[in-house]
Image (cartoon, rainbow over all chains, first blue to last red; front, side, top):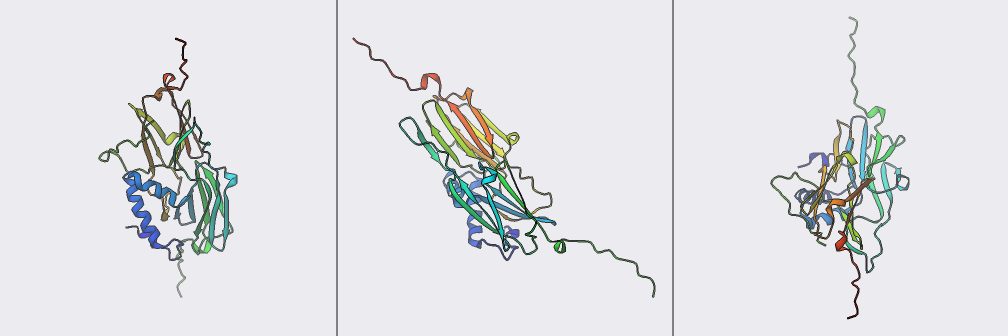
Length: 155
Length: 123
């Protein structure tokens, strides 16, 4: 169904989790209310990872945070995104009633394993509209390149 | 207050994620906060149809054109969620603010719906 998911042998996430997410996503897609809370509670933040010819791009869906409070670290090919999202719910009282409390609050930590050819020494991270984008360039030697064919002088 | 989900029109609506929300009511109205990461102010639409409030947003990641997905937990680039507002809420004066992917909606109560003391007159 998603061949690109299994392309990386070093993927940190077990296959069953990917399968579970696929099922949840299918339910999400049809706006089935019962499954959605479970899906959003499952892992915070949700992470998308993609590659281009030049870099690995990681998108973490971390809305409502101060960019300075997001911790991004890299150690031995493992990218770790961590931080804390404080709850902004008011205290319930006679006048204040909380009807829904679905948004994530508390500490979070996600680890993403980077492919072999990622160059960990040059990482770029930016935060925009609640999305943390981390770009890890690929090593020069790993980039696809064109090899020029030279004309050899006749022997 | 009725915060039930509006019936989903499956035939016409494109697939969308249901964003998580916090809903708090106080004396003057209701505050809804929704997580919509990746949605900019321009890509957000809030509409009221009768008593149904619908929040809809499209995700723009700004990813590279030739990107190949390796691992995708968010596979639908759209959020949608509807709420049926009660008659006591003033749909004319809804306030919306978007910051860092979090939408804050303030729906005030109609004046006549606000709690008030009923004075007891001496008979």
